[in-house]
Length: 325
Image (cartoon, rainbow, N blue to C red; front, side, top):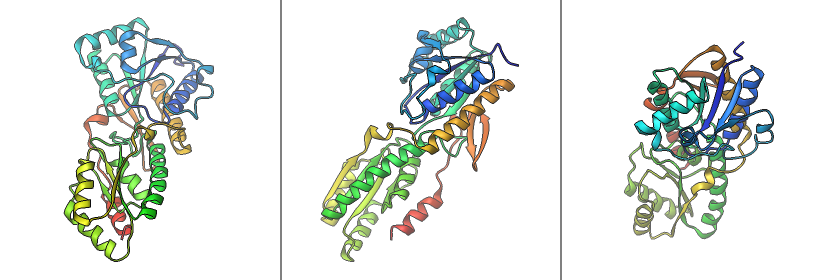
């Protein structure tokens, strides 16, 4: 039995719906295995500032349905400095932490890997991917991605009502500065006519021509879903209007995509990931990330989470094109 192991939970970077469900799963599974659990508040900044307190069964009661993270989170640049890293490791030793469970996106995984390396690989780190961008390598899906998709689709369904009523083109921006996983999933689920992502070049003039042709044949409205890193939405709106003479409106869904109660899918994925993370701790594994592949829970090296390149499914683009005809 691993009675003496002490586990610290950290949520870092942007929040994602389902992080609380992960915290709950890790705490309760860890206690089941006779592990001590503490929470680090405010991400890696809290590790540097020694904001660490015990977690127990009651600490995580009633949080499975809550968005955000009860541990709170900030983006911490100090962890990238020598001084910040040394202070973090000092506090890990001071609190006699055997494991860190880091919950977040690829930046969070990178930070966990650097802590593992800077400690001479003495600090054991397990990563659980939670990000609405779904851009973490080593997993088909991240905790919170399904919830963010559903939130955006619900909003676009309402926008389409207005687009149809007023015979307008709507350009809708979703999150995704560097990757287009969310835009692709949302675009397909909402029946968008066009999907724009950073990874795939698009021909704006060709798109305008298609819109004009469709309008002549009776198509009265269009939804264009774009990732925030796919270009200037205002420039796109202006060019579409100039080329087609149609009314064009822009809508940025913004931070509503991060909030809200996690879907059942996000909650269950969080629970599976949390259980697997504790299983790795009990076994004594180090520097691993939990993920899901072909509906099976898997693990990979922690550094692969941010070094690896996760590819978009081109078949989904093709399907969206066919269905948008």
